[in-house]
Length: 204
Length: 302
Image (tube, rainbow over the protein chains, first blue to last red):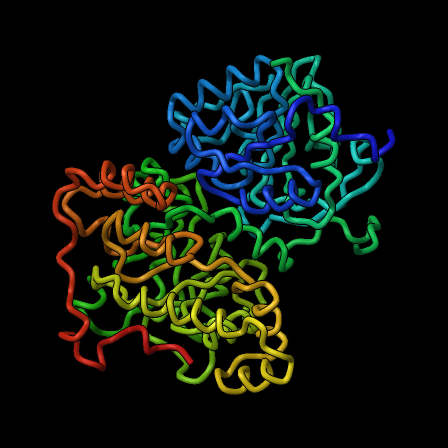
């Protein structure tokens, strides 16, 4: 796939929200800026009205879930069901999942994608690592940073595996929802963000 | 961009991975806990990590004596009790305590002035470890010396166990003020400033280029209320450590939740007002001037 097509496929103004409750939202905002797209920090449900797409950043998934007000949760779920592109990295992938293993019993994900994930699947911080991950989505190999990262343990038939590493699924796509177990935002490689920006926007 | 080859795959304990975990903690609150039950209360409240300790700083201060690394059994129990990262403290310069903490699977080590220093001239060579370290600072020179030794995260020292935020404010303003002074400085001025503050020149140059510390910088020491947390965030900190401020207060669960909310909505006084309502009594607190000079903790560290 040509890598220079991209952004005009997002309809309307190209404003991308980044959930800014906790975590590395600043790095995602910078990555979006590097892709010449305006990033908008999202903390309250009303903030979501101004954006066409949403990024759920890395951080602590339990903390983000605790801080997300019910109206914001409902609004994200509603917009995603209507077709808004959503990308989650690490904790963001956990938030997007339908089912969490190794989490807290009361941890309720947003259920935006039909995937099951295991939290801290690689172990503790001592097992965090940098790797090279190949994917057709970025047209080859790219750097990936896995920090106390999750893994995809199950996925519905229409969930596409975009990348695997050491036999584990680490990047998945379902419709215009994209979930990565690692952190492209911690590297200088912007191809995952560029790929996200090629996903079709909703009809609004 | 670096060459991507399979030989580079799966590198553990790299700088990016160490500093990266701190990036994930940003905008969050790290809480001191002394039991598994407290750790669960902290996780429930939305803490991004817990600091596993035998005694919170307020008790260390009251009881006196030599304060050391906590019992590994206690730290292991806290690791088992929660799903969020667990940090633990070792004494300044005590690299064997740090080795023990690393073998326990602790996610971050705090080389902390709250414990009694084991070396009165050197800190630990933190590059030698696979897990990351956080260290305290009172000014830019101290912060950059710690980063040069391998600290992947910095915090203000404040004055731990006092419930008095004044020292944390002083240290944060010292760091940001010193960084602001670098703006527009030429290379020759950076070298002399590096000499003056006792910091490596290349690191000071990077700080000048970034306009901020090269690693994540949290506030610590004396934070006792949601407003204290928001104050430190508005002063430019990336997140908050709360030591004695939560479990020495009247209603720890409510106060913990309120401080978490205040750290996210630090620039929204209306939300801060709501979060600060009906929390019960905060910890008692100490006037810094009333503490004998030799009992101040922030001066420990070189």
